[in-house]
Length: 431
Ligand code: SDX
Image (cartoon, rainbow, N blue to C red; front, side):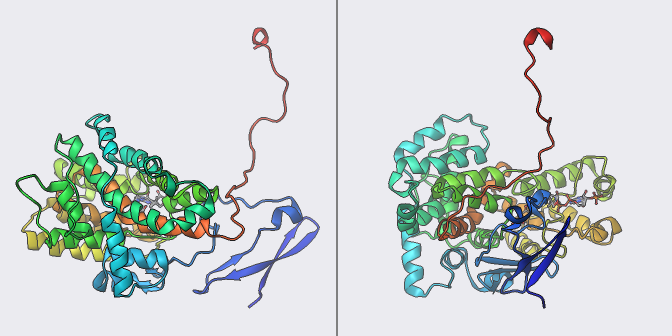
């Protein structure tokens, strides 16, 4: 196979090297295109553009493959857990017992937030969006723990292990605290003998006289949801971490920007939008068939939320796993959720409908995840912060990868300017 691409522009014929990944993905290295030709590439939405070479996560959208550092997601979902996968995604290898314990202890030790941060929650309106609070609080960590957010790249990398544990541990505490304050409940402190997921549920739902127990089915289901969200290659929010981190910004500031990116309904906001869609269908008495026609029309402004994906043109492997977990959890908890029945009907109808099949639209990670979160009593307005808690290891790993690059170039795309050409200033009395 040729190791170069030939590009003919005007009277020039130029060759550019081909880059091939370990999974045989191929890319044309165009880093010298502009200097050689004055031309740039144009690829709105970057669907055909590789922004980096990464060793963290591999996705094959055509085959529905997702692997964290080479390990298939279905195997990790069955045999691993969120904290072990977080270690794998960040450090590149599965931890041995000692490494796992040290990582878990570092996360446990850093579960609390500075007491002064508690007062900030009180300043928000009761109905403030938890993503707004999370983004602000995440970047504020740099103010309370400045030694972990110096914006000096070598210093921030030297303190990376501590900063990573802070981000993974405290995101959970911040989310739970914002929920508690929004309900007028006291902020609950983490418990030393609870694991990561049990501690989150404790901080969300315990009361001084009624502690949320550890080792529950809910904790197990939450562990699976977070593991399945832990990383996903160069999605919108992870690319944002790399963009912001490439400028030398500290981990907390880079993650704060990613939280803003995740908030969008086409990205992390979709899990909420799916439940809103299912509830709307349920309330209307429609069995889903009317909604599907609206989503197909292209004029209703409605989409089948939780369906479709920029990369997966086959089943999102995470959707399969979550779909199965839905049935198990709801059966074990004895929950009858009409939204699950409607979701199943929508999936069945869409997968037999040429509109969706011809566009390779299949359920994605968000289609069933909201149903599990409802079963865990997570409030709808917190679904996207749950996605942020899950994606934290991926954001942390990508910040480290971009920050550790030897040449550390700032990311700065070009553009094709389509605005007015040069013109003279017009005084006010002549406009
Ligand atoms: C996540 O990137 C990641 O990895 C993201 C993520 C992660 O883990 O980080 O996997 C998490 O964000 C999952 C996606 C969650 N979003 C949704 O479920 C929102 C609903 N889905 C869509 O809006 C859409 O499918 C996207 C945004 C996910 C992908 O959009 P694309 O690839 O840009 O596709 P497109 O918008 O260009 O659509 C192509 C065609 C269009 O129709 P035509 O113009 O060809 O007639 O498919 C149609 C679209 O109208 N289409 C849909 C549809 N998704 C696409 N029609 C109805 N319902 C849908 N859901």
